[in-house]
Image (tube, rainbow, N blue to C red; front, side):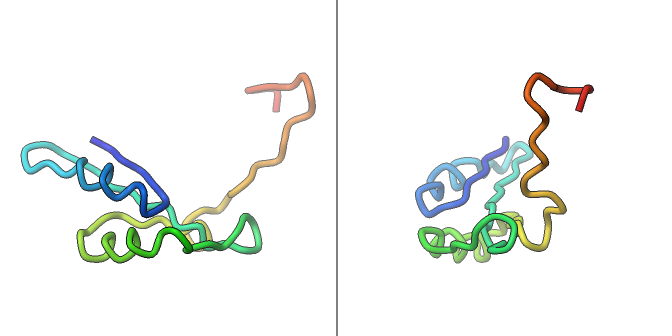
Length: 82
């Protein structure tokens, strides 16, 4: 089971994902890259605290993602054409 979120409002969903009898992944996306996207932990303070105490996986946009926004393809071009 997988749950991914980025804010305090996602805590119940991330908690619900935990199961002792099957695999699960609780993923919290941290918006911490002001240069390529935006930096904002506001609204995620409790979720970040709970991630640390509950063993959730936290993904940093700044440190863990090599690409935030891909270049937009030209109009009319899709998929393998790009």
